[in-house]
Image 1 (tube, rainbow, N blue to C red):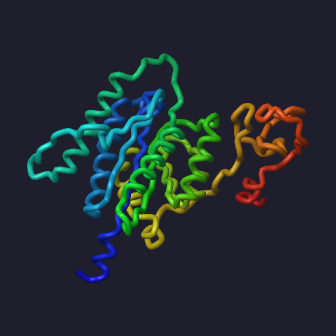
Image 2: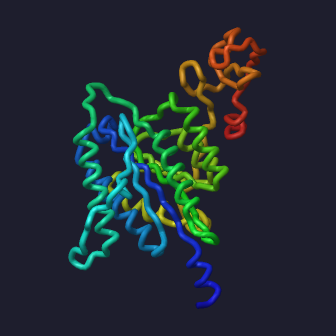
Image 3: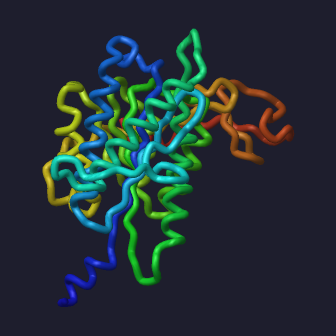
Length: 292
C-alpha cells in the first residue's frame, strides 16, 4: 500500500441530512405525494454518499413540528436486513430503516389543526451533537470531514434566530459545513448559515429534478466544489432579527450590556433587565452585503 492509499484509508466523511417532514409545509399541503418523492431522493442521495468511500458515514434526521427523530441510524437495535436482488446490504438497510422510522413518526405525531413551524434549528443542533459524538469515538489519527445538509420547504421562522446563530457559529468553530436546499421560498437565516460555514445554498425552482440537483451541487465535498461549475452565489441578507418581535430589521436599538437588538426603543432591556445605554444602530452586516 503506497502513501496515497494509506492517507485515504485514514479519512472519511460524515454527512448528516436534516429532512423537513412537517406536513404543514405549503408544498406538502398542496401535494402530499411530494413527501414520498423527497424521501426517495434523499435515500438515493445518501446511498450515493456511502458509495463514494467504504468508510463514509450517514445520518438522516426527521424534522417535524413537535420533535426531531433519527431516521438513520436507528437508535438501539438495528433492523435485520438481508440482501435483496443483489443490492448492497448497507443500501437496503438505509432504505428500509428510513422508511420504517418515518412511517412510525408520522403515524404517532400529534394532530394539529393550524400550520406549525418546523424545529429546524433544534434539528441542526442535534446533528451537531451527533457529529461531535462520532468525532470523539473516531480512532486516533483518523480524519473526519463533516457536513450538514438541510432540505426544507418551510417558511422562515425568526423566533428561532438565536438558536440558528448558535448553531452556525458552533459549526464554523468546529469546521462543519452547512448546506441548504430550499424547496419553496428563500430563507435568509439559513442563507446566512451557509455563508458563515462556507456551505452551498440552493433554492430549487423545479422540484422534479431534486435528486439531480442533490447529486450535482451537494454530493461533492466542499474542497471539490471549487473545481466545479455550480450555481452562482446570491447576495446574502444579513439582517438581524429583533428580540422583541423576532422580525428581521434594518435599523434597531442594541443593548450595551447583553447586545440584544430591539426594533423600538425601551429604557429597560427586556433580556437582561438592566438599564444600559441603548444606542441606535444600523445593521453593518447588511450594509456590507449591500454597499449601495
